Image 1 (cartoon, rainbow, N blue to C red):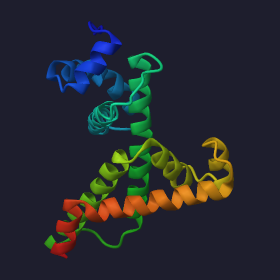
Image 2 (image 1 turned 60 degrees about the vertical axis):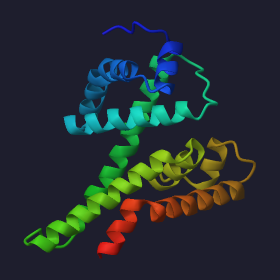
Image 3 (image 1 turned 90 degrees about the horizontal axis):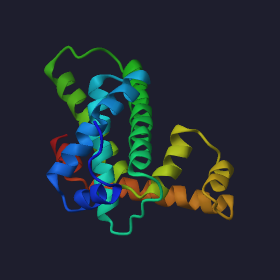
Image 4 (image 1 turned 180 degrees about the vertical axis):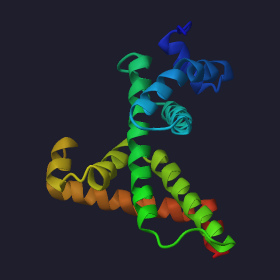
Length: 193
């Protein structure tokens, strides 16, 4: 499929919530995302989730109002969906690791509901991290998923000192915890316990 709109028209359409433009972006990138995710050991369901999350992330970024497209839309969106897949696959790997070490199997209803709640908590974390600013998201990803040292993070993020990187990580982590605790679904799940 070939883009019939300019990069600027796509951006303006997304900012205006134009369903035709959103549908065009979805259709244009669906197969690309599917190929990319399945090539990188994901499933078709993973690819659908990545595409949806990438479009949501793109929409939120464009709605801020200060967005400037520095490259083509194609390059920008490719970066968005690839980063979304990297992030989701790392979270899923951690989730699978937890699953591998969890005791027993789901033999009764209480196990089923416990598993359901865990999945809901996982969803809240993904949604909340996706809503964070790029700086916080990058710092947390580098520290927790890429296992980078604080000095490496300081260098990568162009901070003047390691202490600045530590402070940023702590502020971002604190912010993440606050947002998760304020999430309505989180409150509902906590009330049900």
